[in-house]
Amino acid sequence: MSQRSDDTMMLTTPFHSRVAAACELNCWGSWKDYTTPNAYTDVELEYFAIRNAVGVFDLTPMNKYRIGGTDAEAYLNRLVTRNVGKIAVGRVGYTVWCDDAGQVMDDGTIFHLGENDYRLCAYARATDWLHWSAMGFDVTIHDESADIAALAVQGPTSCSALMAMGLRGVEEIKPFGLAHFDFDGQPLMISRTGFTGDLGYELWIAPEHAEALWDRLFDAGRDYMIKPFGMEALEMARIEAGFLQAGVDFMPAEDVVRRGRSRSPFELGLGWLVDFDKPLFNGRRALLREQTEGSRYRFAYLDVDGNKPAHNSFILFNGKQVGTVTSAAWCPTAKSNLALGQLKMPHGGVGEELVAEIYYQRELQWTKVLAPCRVIESPPFNPPRRRATPPDAC
Picture 1: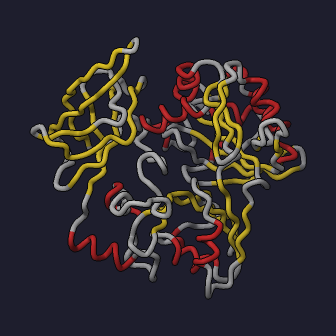
Picture 2: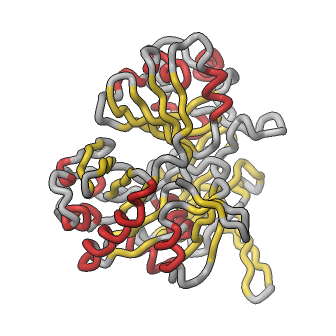
């Protein structure tokens, strides 16, 4: 159960007592009205825990919706762009959902927990949208965001740390698979999912057992250099892996107030999630039209010269602005200066040479850099351990 501080009126997660004790920097932020750490000790050390050992992130504030009923699959198929019927029981699928104009409202994951039993995890609150879309379907929709505590356990030794807890069989979970375990007589669900682009798992448990889970995990992971990590380290890892963030790399269609500010799945490089062979879904007609007529924008990964991240930069071609950077970071493991950007068509083809107009401040002095950049086919970080089953470290 979520707790609210009388002093701050901010929600705290069931792990908060442990999180607060570990947050030496006292550097806090807000995620969906929950108090969450931006960083615990040192952002770079937390990042390297994700890439070289095992890092733990409190995932509890994620919006979680339980969807059941005889029409659950048909309802979700009407809601999202991918074919939910292809997500087998015990599997997880990444997807997006659109408004009638084919503009992305949010992205998230669908957990197929059992027959007519699903969990939808989303960045944005979607209670109203889910209920409006349920008209005519025999479904139940329950917001279980406060009913489930969750930890992301990420990094090359994450599997070893979980096995040290006695969770035998976790090494056999395939990417985007899930399994159920006994934790002191209580159900614990583990999915091989995450937002870091590395080997990783997410642990889902009832809130009253959250502190015990944290303690057992950190005791078992001590020999594997386990560390908690905050939002800033997560941001570095997800950019390095090329993962999009709602509200950063695209605006949810429901939130925009100016025409043309939202994007379609094709314009976000997510056309592979659109299945026109399945029954009718929200935005299908508009997306078919876009497929025929072409898109306005193209999402691109940019390899930028130098080591100055191209935060909020303009992208230029022959001196004219053709796009903007939505996310950027110097990627320590990949040793590259990566930017995620939206470019006006026809720009953004792999190999195209462009320029990033970068501004950065040092000691109150602003400096402008025109850094050459090149469109690359995929993000630079994509290790084999992300897909290996069992993971090599286990």
